[in-house]
Image 1 (cartoon, helix red, strand yellow):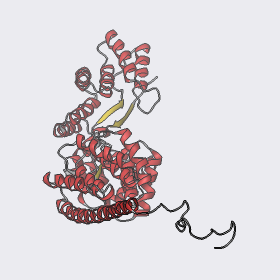
Image 2 (cartoon, one colour):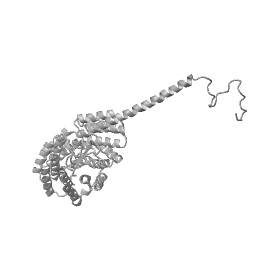
Image 3 (cartoon, helix red, strand yellow):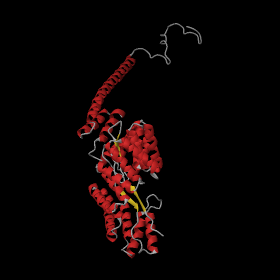
Image 4 (cartoon, helix red, strand yellow):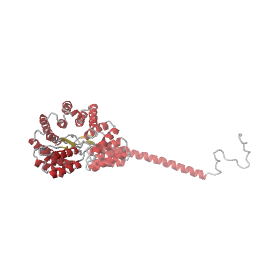
Length: 452
């Protein structure tokens, strides 16, 4: 028998800043500008939690321990319906109680705690695993992930660098290092590290992905496209990777090759409809085409994956507005305000919603002024909107005043006519109208049915 080894990683998503960015299996963020309003999109695969790793010395494991650890590993695989980190934690606790010297048991206990969000506990278990078996390179990898989740990418990067020097053949550490360098903006070093890593393993989808992202950051879209196309043609599994198709689609979009961009982004979503970058970038294309209905479907799914992603929430509001669902749009803008109170972008979009669509000009101008006061990037454009809304408000006010004057005049005319009718002399006209009845002594009435 052999120990089950699953070293795939599951990405967590987080909000990213507005502007150019990356998506990386080893960590990163991405944003794309929303074409119509002050918005954008951000998708991160940073930081990542380990899925189900085991490795290290297993010679001292008896059959029962071996089976129990592998049972826990199966429960730690998030791609399976059996995923149950709490169940894995229970099993591993029993193994560690029976024999606290098994390094891989501590390592997987760290994974279970990591997946459950117990970062302090995960750190303790990883350190225990490393103390018991210093050959476990995964310890350094996951400790780096913890640093990323703690908001210390600089410490994570230092950890990856030191770990690669110690274990230069560990491709997962090299992938993490390259992704961390891209995220840190150390692009030239990332390119050098990626090329060096590809000398170790030419079949790493993650390395090709990160190398392409590095070229995107340099603005060299032709080289980025070459890297992704080479990966699809030469790396096993790359053409079935949502990650590769999503970033290739992103590059093609930057090159204004929109038909092929749409093809690859659609392919990415078909391959993995839970891969946030694919969902977001394809929704961006739909929104550029004013296809808000399809954008809503993708962004609702993206929000299910990461309800705290500011740009996903904001763009969903824009898409709702495009489909005429104004109340839902406002709710998403307000949710975005709570997620990032210092970000002015929701106020810009709220201003458009109130002013352009609801015709609540005063509310629209107030929201846009708030955007300007907060230092929004498109303050000049917001000021133009305010001027346009002010003019429209004045025209609407004049129309309303004329309408009110017309209604008032009609009401006064009706009241005067009523008074005239009430004050008029003689008997009222017979029902149905016609001439007044003849006075007494007047001629004979016309015979029934005849002429007068």
